[in-house]
Image (cartoon, rainbow, N blue to C red; front, side, top):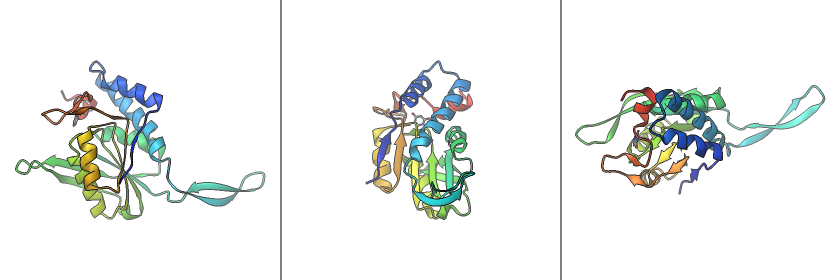
Length: 209
Ligand code: URA
C-alpha cells in the first residue's frame, strides 16, 4: 500500500491556516501556495536515494553524497497545480516541468486529458505530480494514468489538502504512488468540495471569482 504523509511542520501548518482564511486575497494566496509547495517539497524529496561520489575540495579529496537520480519531473495538473509548480521548481531548479490539463467529460463525468506535454525522457525521471486539492481523487488518478502511460515508474503526488475519499480512491487505483499532504480534512460536501477546505483553489489563486 502506498504511503500517506501528512506534513505537520509548524510553518506548513501556519501557512495552511492563513491560506484557508476566506479573507486571504489572491496575491497572498498565491504567495502562500508557492511557499507551501517549497516547504512540502523538502519533505517530499527526503527519501530520494543518494550515492557516494569522490570529489576534490580545495583541501583534499572527499567522499560526498549526491542524488542517485538527478532527473526529476514536476507535473502540475492544470490549472490549480500551476500555483505549486514554482515552489517545487525553486527547490529543484534542474527538474523538468510537464503539464497535464484535464476536463470533466459531460457524459461520463470522468476527467479526460485535453492537454499533455511531459519531458520526453519521463520514464527515467522521478515524477512529482502537484495539485492543491485531492477531492474525489478522479483528476489525480487520471493524471497518474497519463504519466504511467508515458513510462513514468516512480511517482509521488503532492496536495495541500485531501479529503479522506480522495486518498482512498487514489490508493485503490494506484497503490504504488506515495501521497504527501498538509492536511486530511473532514470530508467532501455534496458538490465535491473539501470541507472545511479552502474553497476553489483555482479561483482563489487566479482571482477568477
Ligand atoms: N477543488 C477545489 O479547488 N476545492 C475543493 O474543495 C475541491 C476541489
